[in-house]
Image 1 (cartoon, rainbow, N blue to C red):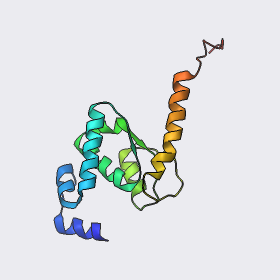
Image 2 (image 1 turned 180 degrees about the vertical axis):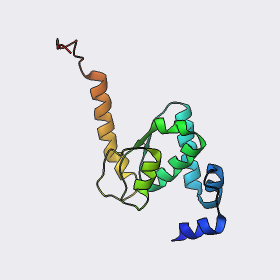
Image 3 (image 1 turned 60 degrees about the horizontal axis):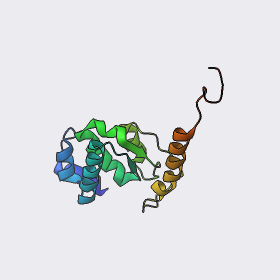
Length: 134
């Protein structure tokens, strides 16, 4: 595995997110980690889609654990390591369809569930409004 070889060769410090990123990350992971950090700083949720976005989320989480509050895992990718990454982030994916298609396909499907959830939350009647005793 090239990642395993890269870790052995570069020896990133597992406690230093920037060191990990600079030694075994790529520009796309760094860019996505930056977006996640920026969104969380502005209280904007981020929908993650697949293993690369989970890797970026882990970098952002290592830099600022508060980012986790703004992360939504769209699906559990069938890529090896996705389950581990989600476990490390303590996130439950909305969907688990054994997909590894890429192109944001999990997020595209999860957005429908997210939209429906937000609609229900904003429009659901309270017990008091329907005359139900608690």
